[in-house]
Image (cartoon, rainbow, N blue to C red; front, top):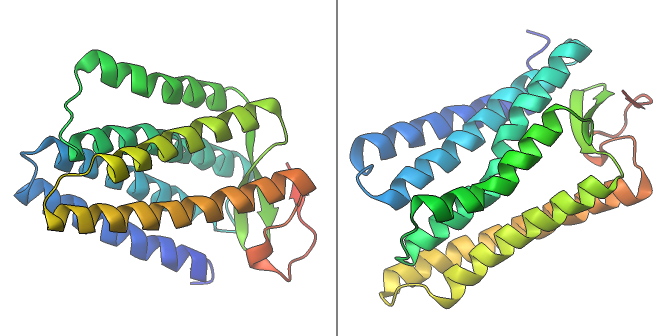
Length: 212
């Protein structure tokens, strides 16, 4: 099938792994709050991969690309607050419903704003549709929100991790892995926005792309 491109295969594989992980945690370790948060986080990643399967199909029409881009925003907008809540549970700090609602509030606001605005849009390339942020104040506010939540989560994990050796090793792994991935994502996104790149550098050589 011509539309099965390498990026689609990657996301199909990722989706399969995420679903298996969700099933495994749900059927074996769902009784702890931290594991419930892991299921939610993994579900977010699964939703993101599912949407990317269609976005990375060149045959997907514009209206459908916009729909899946908006749908995928649920995942990447809510990852920071859920990661922060998970961090509190990992260090054995329980949160009541009010505090959890406050942590989730910025994500809800950003989600509503994204649905009714175009601060996050799609670009057509030879390899399908790629998502990007527009150069605007709202983009920088969102970047501050994203960085702030993830940075504070990593701070909690690093400073207040449990004393047993296994937990420390696990938390260090999560800390450094998340920190490296976050730095790469932020660097790439800021470079794309600042220089107004209209093509995704991972897909060269491409025919001329355009903002829509």
